Image 1 (cartoon, rainbow, N blue to C red):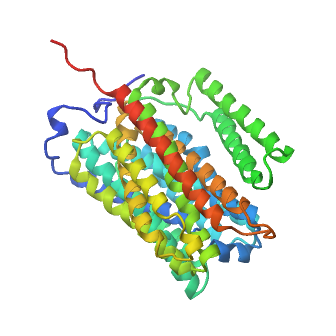
Image 2 (cartoon, rainbow, N blue to C red; image 1 turned 180 degrees about the horizontal axis):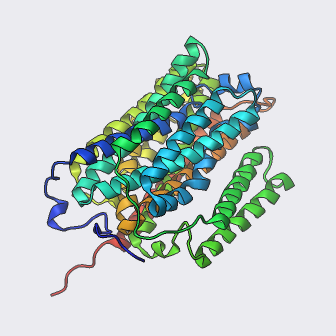
Image 3 (tube, helix red, strand yellow; image 1 turned 30 degrees about the vertical axis):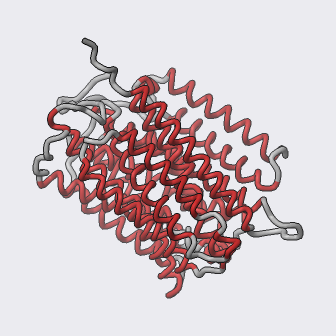
Length: 485
C-alpha cells in the first residue's frame, strides 16, 4: 500500500515527543479547514436529529404509521451506513475537498426534498439522499482534518473539536426543529439547513485545500450494492420483528441481509479496488476503533434517539420540552468532547472508550422508572451522565479513526468508523422502538409502555457494558509489551 510524502505515525497513541508537546500554532489554512469541516458536521447532525423531537407531528402530517415512523428516523442512517465507505475511498482517491463539497451540494438538494415531501415515501427517499450526502461530508471532512493536522497532538485537538460538533448538532437540531414547528411547521428547519449547506458548499473552494492519496481508483460498485442492500434488508427484518420474530416477513429479509453482507466481505477480499481494505483489520487500533464505533451507535445513539419520542408518548411532554431533554444529553456530550482536546495525546483513547461506555450505562440505569413516575425531571441526571459518556466516546473514536490507518487512507478510516457507528445506531433505533412498542399492557394495542421504556434503558445499559468489556479486552491486546532487561 503506497503512502504519501506527508506520512504520519499510524498509531493514535504515539509516544514521540510531539505527542506531549504543546501543539504548534495552526496555520491559517488549517484553521479554515477546521472551521469548514466543523460547520458542515454541525449541519449533518442537525439534519440527522431534526425529526427526533417532532416525530409525532411529522408522522401525522405524512400519515405515517408506527412501523413507518421507524423509517422516518432510520432512513438517513441507512443512507449513511451504505455510502460512508465508498465516500471515504472516493475522497482518498479523487480528492477529499471535491467529495466534501459534492456532499454539501447533495445535502442541500436532499434537505429541500424532505421539506416539500408530500407523503412518507417521498420523505424517506429524501432522508436516504441526505444520508448519502452526510456520508460524503463526514468521511471526507474527517479525512481533510487528518491531512491538515499531522502531529498526534494537533490531531487530538482537531478531532476533539470535530467530535464536539456531533454533540452540538444533536443538541441544537431537535431544539431548532421543535421551536420552528411551534411557530409554523416542521418543514421550516429543512429549508434553513438546505440554504446553509448550499452556502457552505460554495465557500468550500476557498476554505479548503485539496488532498488525496498518491494513487487512483474506481468505484467499488459490487461493494456498494451488497453493503447497501444487506443493511437495508437487515433493518427491514428488525423493524418488522416488532410484531413477531418467527414470521416469514422477518426471517426472509434477515437471511437475505446476512447473505448479502457475507457477499460484501467476499467482494472486498477479492476486489482490486475495495472501498474497505480488509487488511486494515490486522491493525489492533483499527479493530478497536471499528468495534467501539459499532457499540457506540448501538448503546449510546440508538436509545438516546428514541428517548424524546418515548417521553412525549408516555409523559405528555411537548415537542419543545422533549427537544430540551435531548439538548441536556447532547449538551453534556458537546462540553465533554470539547474539553477532551486539552488532554492532547496523553490519555489512550481505549481508556476513554471504557469510561465513556461505563458512564453511558450508569446514566441509563439512573433514568429507570421515569415513565412509571410520570416525571421527566427524573431523566435529567441520567441524561447528563450518559451525555458525558457519549462525549468521551465521540472524541476517542474520532482520534482513532484517523490515527489507526495509513496517512493515504484517512478518509477510508473515517468512512469505516462512521459506518460502524451508524450501522449500530440504525440497529439501536429499530430495536429500541421494537422493544418499547412490544411490552404493552393487556388491552393496549398501540403506542409505548412504561415497561417498554425501562426495557430500552436496561438493554442500552447492558450493551454499553459489552462495549466497555470489548474495549478493555482490545485495549490490553494493543498495549505495548513491557520492556525486558
